[in-house]
Amino acid sequence: MNTLRFLRRHPLPMQAYFEHVLVLTYAVAAAALQPLVKPGLALDTFEDYGFVAIAMVQTRSLRPKLAPRPLGRDFFLTGYRIFTRYRTPAGKLLRGLQILRSDTDSAFMVRWGNRLTHYGYRKADVDYRLNDGMLEIKIHTPGGEADLHVRANLADGSAPLPQGSPFPDLVVARKFAGPLPFTFDYEPETNSIIRVQGVRRAWNPQTVAVQVLQNTFIEKEPFAGGHPVLASAFHLAGVPYSWTKGVREPVSA
Image 1: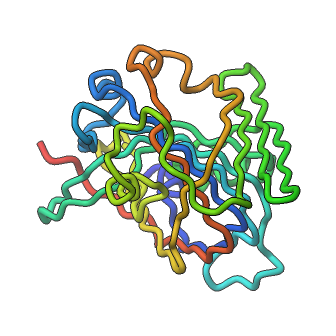
Image 2: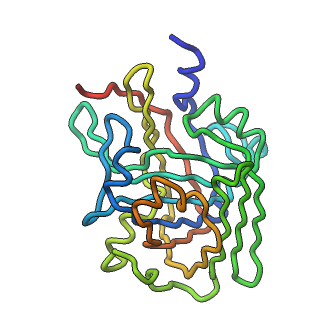
């Protein structure tokens, strides 16, 4: 077996603390997202839309499950994911997120995270500030391909869904408020899905009012051709989170 391939299958159970999580969900025409969906997965849709989640996470003390907290790593992560469904070989249907891109301010995570996961970390400059209930995040990527500038008003409590959202209510919107329990990626060398299950507690996302001042990722193709619309913005704070070991399952013929 290829050792590097084995190591990238998330071989260790992990744990962390999410200090702040801000998730933007964009509705995109399903036809525009379909070519991005990996073998073995199906696009998770509502009406004629697929959905892209952009999760900005201030992470504290990421470490193997049994390691003491002082050994953990603090870093900022921006994860770009598509909402998908996966049917296991046993026939169980799972909802989760397919990895598109991951940016981080940590060189350690780029080096070691890419050896132990499928997340595909890339180095970015991150300016993260919380002042008087206003969370402001600026992310600059080397080629400008995923620059992001967002302001979220955390002081005013729950906000209505963004204007133009295709979601009829918060009940439906919460179904597309990532992160979801499962994350998926495809391993082409073995025609397999690698799935990782997250275990979360105190999970109560609240809608927030946001200003998206820049988002170069969603403005490029194929997303731009699918007429992306900000469908929801959710925030959480102070969330313990853990992940089980990755599971590899062959894609059914």
